[in-house]
Image (cartoon, rainbow, N blue to C red; front, side):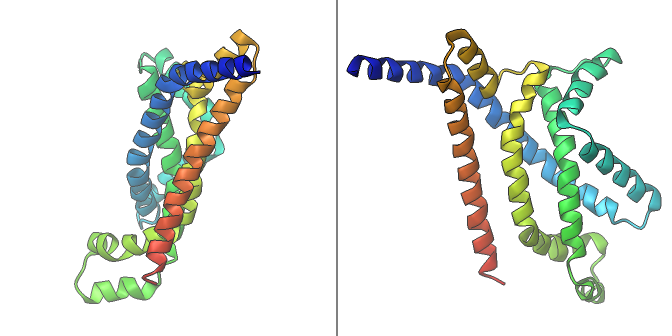
Length: 221
């Protein structure tokens, strides 16, 4: 019995060191997507609300396409499809570009609804104070919008953590890829349990972070 437990512990320790590079890939993909997709989403949301019909309609079509097609298909198109067109992109940059473009579309709709929820009187008040449109957005509207959209952003963050596993479709070796290979090689199930635990811990941490942010901003309401 003791020997079996020791073997399990050794196997789990060995598996952890095997998946460590995959964990690094997941974190890099997650952080880069967050850093670039949220600002891009804000820009798209503002453009979507623009009085310029061409700009607004173009962004609307972009959002419709990105939200209406599977992320896996988008990964394949950016990596393999662009390669067929003579534009060669390495695997990891291709994944980052795809994730950023995809999640920016979702964040754009979240921020658009948040901006539209702000009372019109605040826009009018800012105009009376002499602020232009961009100053009004930066100093008055967007800070309030951010507080209101924290819950849906938190949901998208949790989804993003799980979606990083889709990067394997273009050959990126991340956590799920490693555990799948290990499980197939050794005919055991516990690698999948380790992967599930990893994703559960990550989602738990970020759920708590966003819960704390919501409570913090709710204090000032």
